[in-house]
Image (cartoon, rainbow, N blue to C red; front, side, top):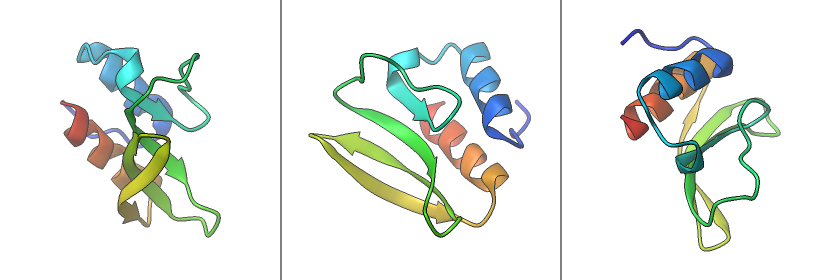
Length: 81
């Protein structure tokens, strides 16, 4: 599987891999409703960095910060597959 270069490519890669929609949230691309009780996420921080992490028990826990969208997408793909 090729590394995704952006959030839309990541969404396509996760669907192709059969990852359930409720297991992740990709800001601006895939935001399941209703919000699952826990999931992995990719979002852009206020300072422009990209963050990947886990949402559990009503709290976002950032696992890693990335300088590029592509690096964050690759990280989330690895976490979910």
